Image 1 (cartoon, rainbow, N blue to C red):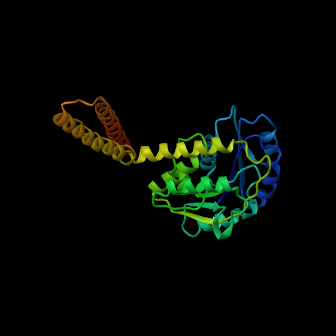
Image 2 (image 1 turned 120 degrees about the vertical axis):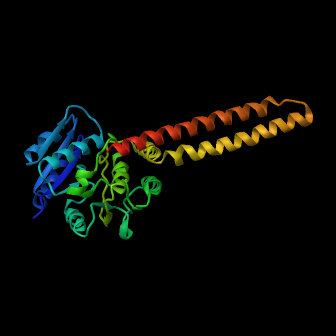
Image 3 (image 1 turned 90 degrees about the vertical axis):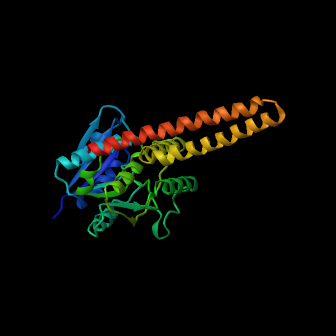
Length: 291
């Protein structure tokens, strides 16, 4: 039988973590909680409930907590790991759905809040934000809930994923790197409920942070698309503007400084973007060849 672990990133969740752990305990072989610099009794309560507790001395972020949990799970020889939020948003009883889906040949299974007509409890602004991130991160592996923290991972996935994001952008990073590693990604429907204190993150800052992290990750992986294409467009625009400027001068003998300034600005931006694209592309290529 595979060894199944529940992995819980937790920050100031003393009001919910015991309820989550008591329902997880019959379903898994080990519960691992990363107390990410909590200033309350989260870690102590988790320990009292029989969980293995990793303690960060200060709050390092959701991504850093996930990294610590993955490392601990690998060190304990875990075959299947399921991440689940410690704020009682997810139903621990649905964990078996994700684990069973791994048996169908998937390496990463997402508990989606939006399959089979679910998602009515998700606030509208949150739902729209997730749809935007879903579209940006599709990259050949479209999912309905790219930001769900309720996920199951095979041993192969745990060994393949080398994470660098410390914040909420790690959810996107995992999907991008899973796709690059050839891991199969699936989804199963899960429920969700929100409490007044179910999130410690400002929703606007959270959304902006995830979006910026997503753009950063994609720009590094596809620099010719993110920087090269706009750079080429600016360069083409600059050529058109220079031709217009010179033609205008040849006809009127009047040198338009406005046209010249626009032409120079477009030339500068195009040069910077195309140079950036080439530098990042070369660096990424060298790193990949060294792996």
